[in-house]
Image 1 (cartoon, rainbow, N blue to C red):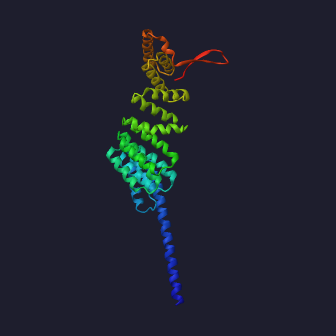
Image 2: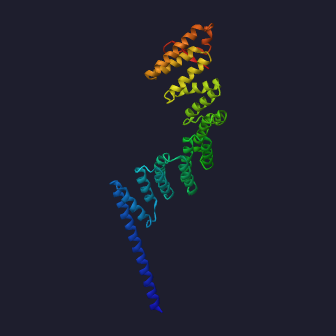
Image 3: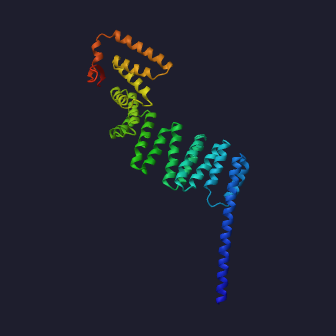
Length: 325
């Protein structure tokens, strides 16, 4: 009986040892194939690389890198459809968060070059198969961008609302801004303002510039010029280096001219002149000439100063004019 037990133990040890050797052999084979795949990719021998990728996929336990290699090859071959499909698979099979984030960049670069209907299908399928919130939200954000690229702003907002459900409070404000922006593109300006007004009241230093500019666009589109002007003046005073500086000055000049405050409009055009190129300067000079003619034609020049007051600077004892509206 003892001999039988001993033999059984020896058989089990042999089987376990053989299995370990077999696994080690398979790992070595996969590693060798991956090195060979990288070599062929570096040499631009894509057909050979693809052949070894397909062969290795049958043996490998972890397939994400192989899918990524395959996606990269099809990207080089400008086969955007297959590239996007394999990049999506590589993301779905990856567990490392940093790698996931990096591969979303590659995926987005190729998916935007796929025909819209195919792109929607690929991303929607990936959303369904995503097993973590990081992956799901990553694919959802790309799906929303694809909708926006195709001017499907309502569909994009539906996606953003889905993302909002599982998003931290600290990240929700940016999503609301995207929704409000799409409402503006849809010309639903009142809905945009309903979103923007409470966000502006938060006075978040990171987003307030963008919020004020969107608020200006929505209000001026509704011909609510006083509200539009209020946002523009805040932008003018608080964000002198804004990338939208030209539009801020131009908007103020237009609104002040509409309100027949020609001197203030002229001042804003002069400010705009300083940051404009030669072609733009020519138009601005024409606009200034038009304002000069209007000033000469008006009967009550005193009205031009109703929005100004003198400000005495203690160090220079000089007078400057400041808009107080």
